[in-house]
Length: 395
Ligand SMILES: [Zn+2]
Ligand SMILES: [Zn+2]
Ligand SMILES: [Zn+2]
Ligand SMILES: [Zn+2]
Ligand SMILES: [Zn+2]
Ligand SMILES: [Zn+2]
Ligand SMILES: [Zn+2]
Ligand SMILES: [Zn+2]
Image (cartoon, rainbow, N blue to C red; front, side):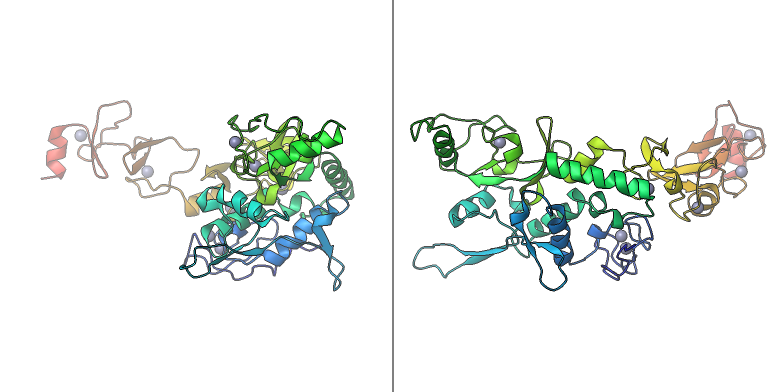
């Protein structure tokens, strides 16, 4: 089993900066052991790995034209489609060329450039810009390797491997596709020819975008998805996942019941996903807690990985933690006795201060009267039953 522990090792976390000592993959969560952020939050250059992943995704599909067999190790790899385009410019301006980390693989370069211009500026995959980083991040997020390759999953049983292989086969046959970019008038011509009708019939009829319902511009590139049928088309910026609304990375889509999905959200629409390891769950036995699904062995403390089934746990930042870790790392201190307040204990909170809701702790700092159910004044960490008691302590 390879979880690729070495991959990305030591990369700095872009979010935590100095607080993370460098990326170190947790042994089954798909996150960093040091800072608990994902791989995409770290400064990892993942092109060759990502290209292999996409290559494998399209292996044994009708889209194999996108991948090339690498002679060296026999692993299929995605050709990507990095292009450098020199734009025609006025005489007195120096030549400018732009490298796109990806552009639609169409013969007409101007169509490819226009497609990219129609994307939001911060999402254009221009090398060295935030748009290129956005594409790489979406590549990791939308197409999780562990949704397509059982060897990237944590300790699957042979039965789970078999179910996963069937699932992958099914989406490759029924849902997965790569879109095309074409001019609507070009497509109308092709369709008219295909139907044996007079060439040019239907050209000029305005068609609207399947996503925004606005008309498509004449002479502007439109996105077509074979699985959806060539009668449907999208503006480049409208070719998005119905769940996350992000641009479908490299126009790789999953089509199901009239909707476009990214790989991750297609998977989520078919199977429960484990909140611990981020893998789809192929076992009948799993647990639901806190609005999420979990492999039984993965409903664990986020800090120490102890199994939480049947144990007291506390949700901290939407992650479950065991009681000992909660007491050590998160519990609020009682302003009166200075001890941590247990997660199950009754407490009173006021501003940033907390007290055990017990007569020994939640009491007047002046006369020690229990304040449960009483009117009280709070001054910093002190509690008072009356102005008189307050005067005794604070002058
Ligand atoms: Zn981090
Ligand atoms: Zn980290
Ligand atoms: Zn649109
Ligand atoms: Zn999505
Ligand atoms: Zn899991
Ligand atoms: Zn713990
Ligand atoms: Zn206390
Ligand atoms: Zn008092």
